[in-house]
Image (tube, rainbow, N blue to C red; front, top):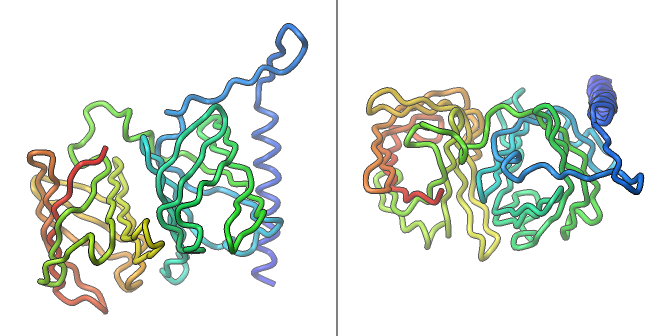
Length: 283
């Protein structure tokens, strides 16, 4: 019964959000009496968004209780799902994207829900009105065929590529070298790729191999930097949910286009676990 009420509330909110979104649209007719279409500039998509309401293939229940964030940089997108009730990670996806008018095409480099979809391109319609981003269209993967999607997101941060005077950590980084737990990691051999996105208030790290479809994990949360201390507060951590809610501090510096991060984390699975990362700026 509790789940049914949540599902009903989610659907009701979706319908209300749709009505409000459409009622606020200004329709301008051209000389032939047809509506003029004014696609939003591609830069409007850049930023951090939090899911307000959704409808997935006529089913609002599957992820109804999840918290969902989506980030767009100038060329990349990143998505994370987690259940705040028990701190469990439930999914992630990401890759690159392009915009053409009122459509964007996402090219999946990792997709935990269906790894066979890695390498595919998915095109959706989008509209942005009063800080609300509406994504609609059809997802087509081996697992999700003709899967209808309607999502409404609220903007919680502007695009990181358009901020003036932004913090030197803000941007997209590719981790090039790393020591985890005292062991030197060959990033390319073990994961294929590690991307870290730092927005003005959030960080997102993904470990994956776009060539094989292999997905290792995601970390996500908020951050701040004071002096040479960079602090992350974990909201989602796919490897060990006991880390969620904890705060970890690292030494950091940006020098010569490289981001150096060193420190330790402690959780049920990782005790005094050393982390040393060297990343190169991608955006």
